[in-house]
Picture 1: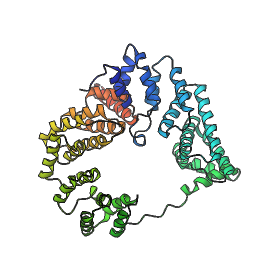
Picture 2 (picture 1 turned 90 degrees about the vertical axis):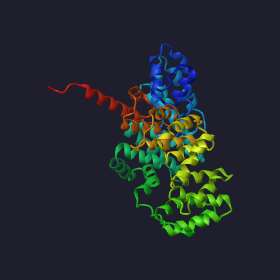
Picture 3 (picture 1 turned 90 degrees about the horizontal axis):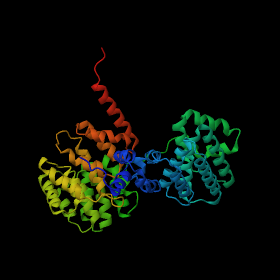
Picture 4 (picture 1 turned 60 degrees about the horizontal axis):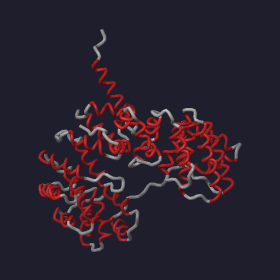
Length: 452
């Protein structure tokens, strides 16, 4: 079973991951003041591993704040941080969300801080603001629209349009525009803009800056040829990997064979890496011996791509190679991911030992890929793995999105402990909370006697 909270360190580790049992500990403990600084520490930093997938932790943090009688301790510190300059965009959004939640609960102090910051950033639009300022202003426009509804949207549109007129250049707020259409409906937003553009130059300026979004679609991207892919790789263009992914979908066996031969002959390791990139997605056609040679390269990037290539060439030799590496505690992340593609029941102990040996940090994301590969094993009903492997991952992952995927798969496998399901009601990830509530409700219904 998962490790329970017995110290400040354990609470901090669980709370920064957004685990429901951290909130439960805070709610039920007799002295939550001892955790106060950790809660504030989490509010003033972004602890989501991947904000694009996970979203923010604002609601999770605010619910924790609301357990304290004096919420102003947190509010004032959050406002002070929020008013600083050049805040990282993900942290800026978390602070925005927290202040919106304070405001929704009636705090005029939080609302004033939001609009004070908005007015200051709006003024900066006239002075060639950097991309960070633009991004943060757009986040703030979204949050204020969520807080103030359609009237707030109309006001922001006019103010952004006025700024565009003063600068003589369009505002770049496509995401804010898309958000508004999703929130209020495409018809309502577009009708408002088109009808009012006739009467207001400011609304017209805003509409013109986003009108490309409403006009004909972009031209389709053609399929790259083998020659184009090789040329892009040799020139080390940033788009060569995108070309490789598109080429992989349509390439013939003959083209893949030519590319493989070309890649093996290439002596420049940077170019070789680009040429081999496609074989992360499709089977390498020259046999596993070449791949094993790549796996012995002194270049880590070449070794990494070799392990990705091995996933498409499952064999006894590859399985034994991965097991040997795990036993030797070498290339741990690569070996663990590889074993997931050729897993056997007798590998279970080494798998658990291996993931327990991984360092789970924000700086090195190798653990993240390993966890996702192990999660995928749950989709294979013929694979039997002790639930302790998945419970360990549940408690250790820094990614709440992946934790949700893990919980869902464990539930389908019927290996999700009731204790974990109960604490998921308080998880930082919204979909996990909803899933847990629904599952617990269904369980309760199944225990009720049938209607007479």
